[in-house]
Image (cartoon, rainbow, N blue to C red; front, top):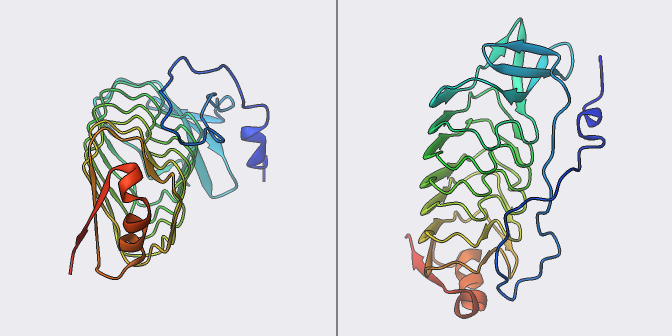
Length: 239
């Protein structure tokens, strides 16, 4: 192994972001206040920069091209592309993104402040999101979270324009705090029965009343009963 993965992130904390949001009575314990920069790529091709994870895998660390409809490669030079690095595509101008099924991890702030991003097709084998992946993606409208996902990072959709999010029935058990926080256009979230843990601040400080569509008797129903009034959430049974 040429390097270890954590070397990519060492020393990665940097400048305070200029964006801010008003409070909601939600704790700001994990409030975003920084961006993350990847190291200089080991390999470059067609605008993409890659970090060599090991003898078989690459992480995308940057993009310098101008495509409006971005298709991330699934391989390069006999390596498989398996991860998107921190801040790799932040503040880019593409409108759509297709992420190959080889990708299993998207690290923090990967698509932060991509203000023109309207739609994203996620990998069917994606496992984890870092924090703030779609932070301030103000044109984003709908996202389907694949059944393979096991972890949604803090503030995944904060400040985005997302209207509807569907979480496919699968491996996700917990939706952590602030995943759906200060989303001005959010009106519905589809949550399967496999989700059995959410916090008081998972869905909070949104402009509209948010309908959670979920099976009757599921954890999501009891979550709405406990938190609906305070956070403008209502429940709709899907079966």
